Length: 262
Image (tube, rainbow, N blue to C red; front, side):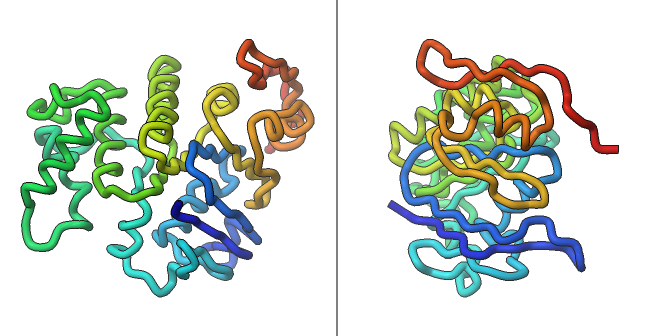
């Protein structure tokens, strides 16, 4: 099991800190969801975990190795990354769009092994039939599957996803959450994703990382430990009731806003 450990991490631009004093350890396979209000630093934290952002202070390490001393290619052996979605990629066949994800693992040219890995990943995600379709012909859910495939073909044990359900309707949000949860079960990998939906997160996450202003981690734990009435009141500023569904998972019924930032 590959372990990510974050110690006393802070990151900011100029004099403005975005995240401060983050301490976190991810050392078990499963689906981790990062929750928190807008602007709290969720995407910033994700980008620090794979050195897109270089910490202002503190460290991020993979299996005891500080990312500061690792190249992007070395990091890609441990961590795959799917940035926040966008369906504006220029038209190309799906198989080529996914093959882009092998770039960090390639030497001089695409090999038979690269193609084999892409084909295996498309079968895993159920999109083999789309291989020669144009990327711009796909639905929103199919776009997300291709983006996820592009991250998976790196064959890294950890996959980071920045809002993989952004701009998707409820059906596709559930679909993507089920897909990612299934991947952790089938492959034994760790998936870390940013989410904004409390109930989808509560239903599918193994662990929740709840962030709070000003860019700190408020609590890490199971959905039952993190999704509570008190936490939602405090972090999101809304009245709510938290019920238990038929699977024993918390389910949030939202009420009125307690306050609005002006």
